[in-house]
Length: 446
Image (cartoon, rainbow, N blue to C red; front, side):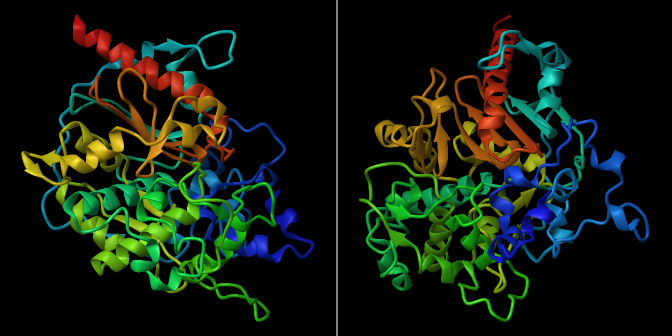
């Protein structure tokens, strides 16, 4: 269990746990029993129920219990009750309804997971991935919607690293408008980063994560840089003898260079935090206000979203967004509708096209993602380069926003899988999404 692992003086790791919202649980955080979606259901286990809850059912941010499993299945819907946040306003207008054309036959889908010897059902996949909510849009209409665990249609859920793709979309918007130069050096926007690894990188290299950084994102190693980053972003008061960075901004100035920018893709959360700083400087707005002004208040969102923040109120650009599931799906639908909502342009088509065409396949291949062969990364989105031109936003513990332009399908999923890395759910997730697309396409041809 996590608490026992934190003993023995590993205080930096303990500090980082408080801000690890975009990173995910390490293997040491998993309980020994083989949890299932049913046995770990937070409602059945009674987390934080009662006035007050029983002592053994209390989840706290300060002691790290929120980060343990199965408590995590409650936490992902309740970050706002545990730590400081900044709102993403949906504006004052009425929500824009999503029309429905529900397809109960979706539950009849079966498919074969990667590496499996036998097919499984749609329902089995829902449970196996510890799904908290799933919305499928087809031709702009809700074809399927289901909730479980801590989530309901009125609730918000941690998007984890799906947040990165929203940060990337904002950057692509500014580039398309000519308000951000993708070829300029980072230090021309943020002089404080001149001596860091980011200083001589271009905005595009940060946006596509082809920067050469000395930064380990190995969650299983408590001495990895990712935990130092998390400690800096922890909003709780630091111990008296703590001497490290005390905010995301401060941490970014300490990142050292390793290698050459522009040669290889390397997935590192600090790239997105650097991009968040660049966006704030380029626009004069913090990330939560920028997302609200440019997208959230213009798509007919149903729920106000929010970001978790560090001790000085900086939104966590790399993983701190929390949102409603249907609103997540609305972002995917923006791509299919050419960036327009009810005929009004919200996102420039050039920004959407930049993401959809993908990045360098050779740079991506250097990262060695065996399950994502032939993919690329562009504007902080993952691009499949399959025959339908699908692309997606991905976050630890199973968060997904999958967009298939050819089939006009959007799949939005929130989950609380006990293993952080997507390698744990991709063998089920990716073939499931393909099966859903093929099923809907076949129905359209009838």
